[in-house]
Image (tube, one colour):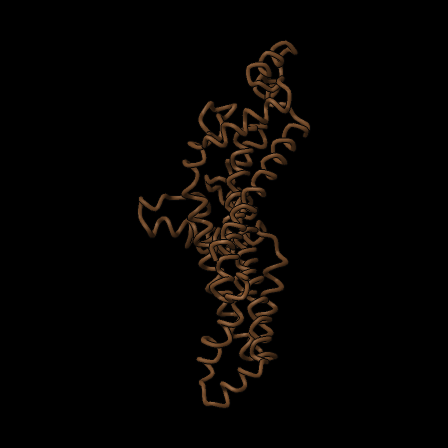
Length: 313
């Protein structure tokens, strides 16, 4: 088990290093010049060149990369070009809204999706099964921003039950915090509910057709025990896999959702940084997202070894 964990950790380091090189080169080889944005529309060529020298953008790429990588290894994500604030500070200021949105979305998606998938698998071909699978197709087909605008129209504008946009810190009150996150969490989680429900159903149907499940029923095991204790446990590996993939995809969905609902999270910070070509922020945020993605995959892989010990060998 220890050797397996060490191998996965080493592969994680390699992946993060490759991501770092890719992000660094992608930003600097793409069109756009932060020095020109800082200088403004009326700046002269000499003024732009002076700003480039101050930012170190005229240095050779290998020198810029070495300087950036050295700082990263020391835990320094750099300084924002425009606000002159450490990137780590900016990320920490925006962390709570993004983490709150992500965790609530995951909780809603997993609970609803697994329940729906189990119900659908328990009665294949029934009205409930067709309704759940129809909802799954619809949920996975409609873009997040469309769902968000529809939810805002009905629950915020028409019914006035929930706020249209914005965010309230959890320290200001649990209910106020939750009210501002319900709509964005549902909008973001709909696609993941659909995805996880379909995989749960397919995996459960495969397990339910096994001989040991028929034997369990023949011995008098109740249907609920057979579904939740035997079938769901043995169908867990594909479900955990798709949950891990969904959490990773959540990273990109957060950017759109925070923009639609005006949530001041890391997604909004990334969008603003891209529009300004603020290299340090973009690099720092992408590295954080990449690290989160790799860690999630590592946790999923380690979960496999608990659900199926054969995988660790």
